[in-house]
Image (cartoon, rainbow, N blue to C red; front, top):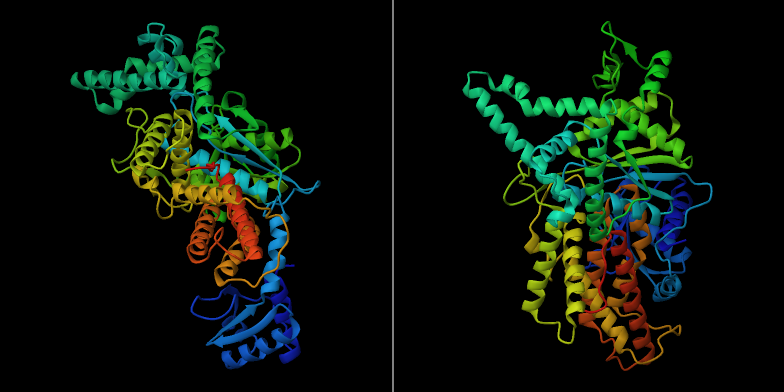
Length: 591
């Protein structure tokens, strides 16, 4: 039991003993720096249960806690805040438990616990991954790692959108204008090559629209009558009918894209346990519609289309089957969710990492699955996130104005190289070591910049400021980790023994921050927010740097103090590495 749990139990006991009143909860906060104390009980919420002077109630509780908790040595009351002083022995004993725990902050899953499936990335196979996909992948991967660290079994998945008119546009443009070029013949990554033809299609389509408009046809009609869009629609029909030539072209070009995606994912440091393909799932859900009609969840209109009426739930009516019997996206999402639980029987919940423009879609999806009677539907979560903007404005794939994910990672590495060379701290590094370090710093900067922001907020991404070695940035935290590794390398004595010392104020503050890590992991998992981990790590690093500047570590004359401070520094480094691991960020041993 940690000290906060002990205090909460005793505050409840004390309230009952002093006032014969039971209270359900106790509110805590960190003691403000200007007051003596380590943890503060907020008295004001307790006034709902006992009317009176908050200072007097604080005094009563303070005396009770000093008498009944050996770790509490003193207290003071400031207005409605009861500040409690925790003795050094508690923190040194706590540290020994933390120090020897190699899995500190992480919880192993229980055998009978249900697993969570986290979906992210889910790209179209007509273009390379871009900056928007970067945020999606980093969020999904990190949330999966955090949920795993909090004690759940996790499956990482994506559904690849490998069919439809967009895919046919790239295929048709390559067929018409590609002259048989391939990734091998051009030296381009496959996803980039295919993406170029998606842009080419749009260029040719616009030319044809302009030509038709010039003959007096309206722009709306020209968009429908342009020969190239009619050809693309015909190609889609052939694909759906299983035309051998179209299917062979589709398989060939998709294979190019998958090779390209794999390279990007590897460079980004994300992975998946299982893949789903829309070409396999787009017919799923139609059988569920029939079952839903029988249950009265859906109803049929006169034209034969099938709908779900959600107006009583504050939403609208949603079509799930067209009058010609074809499915809509909602239908296949219903079917895919059900299929996943069939494929992985231990899955009891899912997290969908999808941009906030799809908020309504997921509200409807989750509600329909609940109405269909699936118990796991209550454990579905839409990890909704804001868009990533650049100083230059919005991105458009079909116009070729996106920021390519691969190019972005190369740019981040180059920016890290430029700034590192300006700082001139890499004497003695080989070129290979330098290049590896630049990549670690550049990607760390990118990931941290994106993940430190609450997922729901929009981001304006500035590559240069993200690689700053000062402030709330990835490189600043990486540099602190490397600094601690330097301390450990220079510690030419045995620092493995257990020691007991009177704590310096800065040691105590650092220990209090370390103590928060397990709860932080649980909080981040509960809120599906890597930002909780990122900002905790920044606070830990700030606290360490304050400790580093105010006490001697290797220069300390007292051997026990020196041992303790090296141990404390090492555990801070271990915790930084563990926390950054949850964000998918590497830490360098030297910088």
